[in-house]
Amino acid sequence: MLLEVRNVRKQYRRFDLDCSLQVQEGRIVGLIGKNGAGKSTTFKAILNLVIPDSGEIRIFGTDSRELDSELRQRIGVVLADSTFSNIMTVKQIADVMGRLYAKFDAEDFFRKCDRFQIPLRQKTKEFSTGMLARLKLLIAMSYQADLLILDEPAAGLDVLAREEIMDLLREYMMEEHRSILISSHISSDLEKLCDEIYMIDQGRIILHEETDRILSDYGILKLDEAQFSGIEKQYLLRKQKEAYGVRCLTDARQFYLENYPGVLMEKGSIDDVISMMIQGERL
Amino acid sequence: MNGLIRKDIYLLKEMRFVLLLMAAIEIFLVFQNKAVDFAMGYMTVLGAMFVINTISYDEPGFGFLMTLPVSRKQYVAAKYLLGICSGVLFELMSIGIVTAAGLILPDMRQGWFRLLSQAGMYCGLVILLQSLMIPLLLKFGAEKGRNIILLGVVAIFLTSVELVRFLMPAEEGLPRISEWIAVHSGMTAGIGICFVCLFLAGSIWLSSRIMARKEF
Image 1 (tube, rainbow over the protein chains, first blue to last red):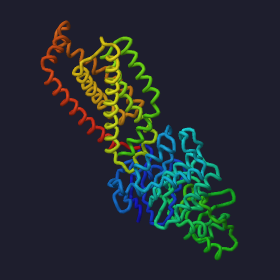
Image 2 (image 1 turned 90 degrees about the vertical axis):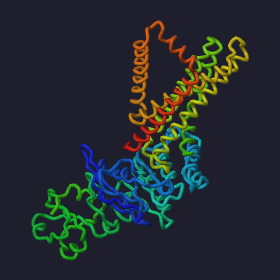
Image 3 (image 1 turned 135 degrees about the vertical axis):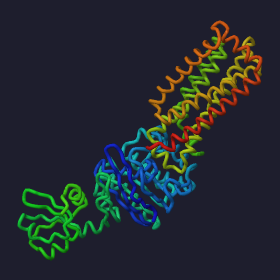
Image 4 (image 1 turned 60 degrees about the horizontal axis):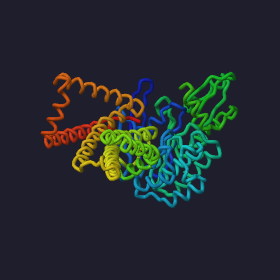
């Protein structure tokens, strides 16, 4: 297990985090939730940037508070709102990285900068949002870290730029032992990239599921009142009142397709699942 | 830590024009006004302020910096090291300018002993200033920290003046202190060095504690 977050709690005046999650070797794990759901706080707790009130975080089997320099060199980080000072140039950042990380590969880093047309001698404050996002990711990937912890790496980017970022991550995962924990509020990004997904809302993990299972087994049933009262409810996770009757989320799509051929069933996208898990009513 | 120092050097490089301006002002003060003592002190105080700028440049990216393979203690150590080194460097620069002035204008020639003891005193002052500033900046941030430092320096100055006035009559206070220092110069230097070292150690301990508890 590369990362294990066990019952981590952090209390703020208007927000409580109570979170558990795991990242295994060779997996891409997504943390998804709307803005303010607790994604960044979870990442900050993992990275020891906020001090949890209770719970345990282990990275590479070591308590996150006791990570030494050698273990920290195995973690690559992108934070949504912070990086090196924006008065530094990429050349200068590379020099600093080379002194901090034993495995920093300057040649590969500069090659990738060139590929993404990132100027080396320009201060990063003059970069566009897309260039800065790419640079942050290239920095995190420049020293062969085993675990990437990426908080909203594609925030504020257009579809094409986001796709480019996702491609970079797929490339990075060609090495088998590597893992990624990534957060986003854009579900389509994670849907295509992640092996498993945690959904977070108001500081709580409300769903943990394999991405393939969400896409194949989860579905939205659209039922009128009569259909709803007669249907088997054992596999319904949430319901929501609609003008036409009731909308239900299930994780056993096939069961309803086979046993209730007359009901209207939509394939569950991650967005649907999130919105139903958050806004729907438990059965 | 090597990486952190390098980062700070790059940040300081941004202020090279300010540095040149400071050197120009010092040269003017020395050559035009022959204000050697003031010029040396001025360079010291301004030099000490440079460390503030590296912390304020770090501030927006503090969270990211704390994920690098350096401990928070190392971050603190890097700031003090940079502060002390920049202080010494500015003092050396001042000595250079004053010595050059002495070579050009014979009436401004300073004795080496006087020059070095003055430089030593200002180095002590720079360490004291930074020891005061760094924990405040780390605790309150550059913006708020700067205001608190300003208020703190004014308060310390006023308290010291009042203390001297209270302990000694106004007309003989300062001369008496100067006389005592001149007679016991070795002891004064020793006390001064001990005080600076203790103050520095306390400040490093406090800054490390502030950083250990800081959330980003």
